[in-house]
Length: 336
Image 1 (cartoon, rainbow, N blue to C red):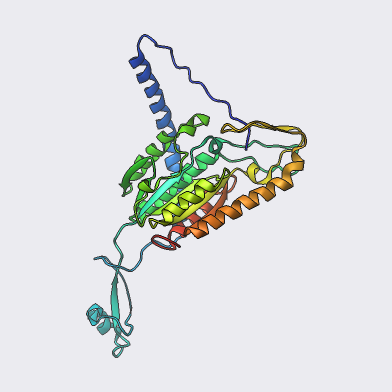
Image 2: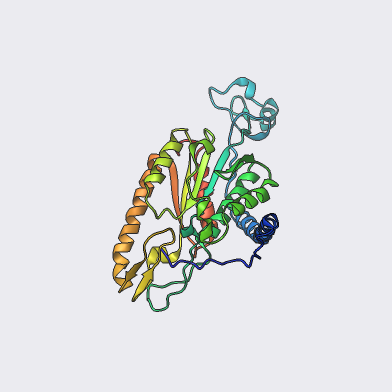
């Protein structure tokens, strides 16, 4: 829902006699706009990731590898070859109480597929509505900007932990290492220019062919439309098998419907406009409908081994990032 945002028209010069020059000029403007948006988004993503990283445990786990992780007391059934005899001698305790097993860290990197909905509804942002007592603070940003921020911050955390990340449907090359974050940001922003013009790209959910087997999938969007496509996609991921997390990002006005009086609602994705003589009369039914939508979405996620979380754009992004990271830490693949 929302008021249609005006489309900004660039001051491109008409150059019919020189189409190549016109295309180059337009490409140059697009590149300049992209470069101007990238640094603030990366800085914000790194800040959010750094804040969350201070309060989370790493994704380290026991497994095959060469890197030492920890000693633990010997337990019946452990192979004798795994006992660290030097550590046992240092303990000064009689056998087998003083025996300790040397554990190594699992070093097989996991691939996480990241996706953010770039449809026109994600580029909507509410404004204050002082005539209604239900009006709160206006949205801090558009839903898409918040989704992109969370996606990049999550990628930063995963890359720090040694995992691989893929922007599903945009950049199929698994990325690893801190240097990959800027490449991901460029690919993400280039895939969806701001405003309603971005609806042609980035809207469809990732195809199963874009999701590696045994990978984890992170889906970020408002998920306010028909859910049949979402349910079918989640079932296909579960069959790979691939599990993961889904984050629903909403504008505060989409949760509270603060409008009052005569209000016209314009659809952003081809829907017919709707005129409400008294918008406040719709509030109770609207909230019930939203609750039913969320309940069905949660049931779909549970059936497919996905965890679900919710976020509002007027709330701090760190909370949503922590929920996503914790959801991915519950398992390696498949059902959580």
